[in-house]
Amino acid sequence: MRDIRNIVILTGAGISAESGVATFRGPDGLWEGHRVEDVATPEAFRRDPALVQKFYDARRAKLKSVEPNAAHLALARLDAEWPGELLIVTQNVDDLHERAGAKRVLHMHGELKSAWCLACDERMTWEEELSSGPACPECGLAGRLRPDIVWFGEMPYEMDRIEGAIREAGLFVSIGTSGAIYPAAGFVQTARYCGADTLEMNLEPSLGSVYFHESRVGPAGSLVPTWVEGMLGGEHRSSRA
Image (cartoon, helix red, strand yellow):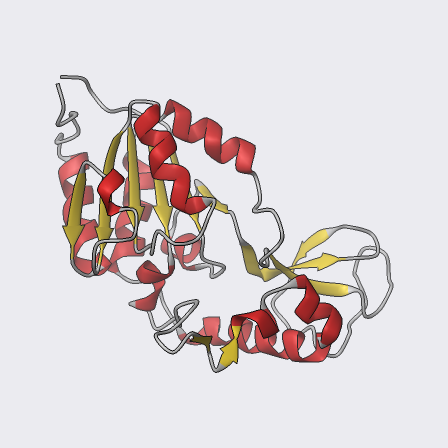
């Protein structure tokens, strides 16, 4: 038996859905009434930038009406109290982890509250609309800001850091993810290969559930606080000899 010290947690749309944030792709294949191909690709932005900007303006504004749920709050508590290394890698572009109090968070797909200037390549905190073509606060050029979101066909952020953390982790946990989108869907395989314990918490088994040592099925708002309580209560030994 060995103590688990380092933890990597991957969170997906399922954790924020309980706060009222729309999942990335609904059962009808649409995201908030739009085809993903029309609002979440570089080609879509080149073809119809006004549509894409208005779509993300609406998503950004929606954040003001939602709050972190019990799962976010539990992970923030774990972040504050866990004595070893911990990294929350989220595929979500909302700020609910941070608003719950978590500090060790990495947004691999970018953030709604961030803008990227295509003229000067600076990224900045942004909470207002972008569809009117405002000037970049850094270089002063207007109409060159885009949502700082990783679209299909673009490389997720900080992959080297994520993969390094997974290689050093004793426990990899996936919460509210479909297991369908790569490269995140492959993280569990990397964790297993490097000797980590693996745990999945989801409303239903993900497409990659076969790679997890344990799967817990149910709402994140119920499962995650119970798991965190156990971890902080000393139940953090490997279940494998």
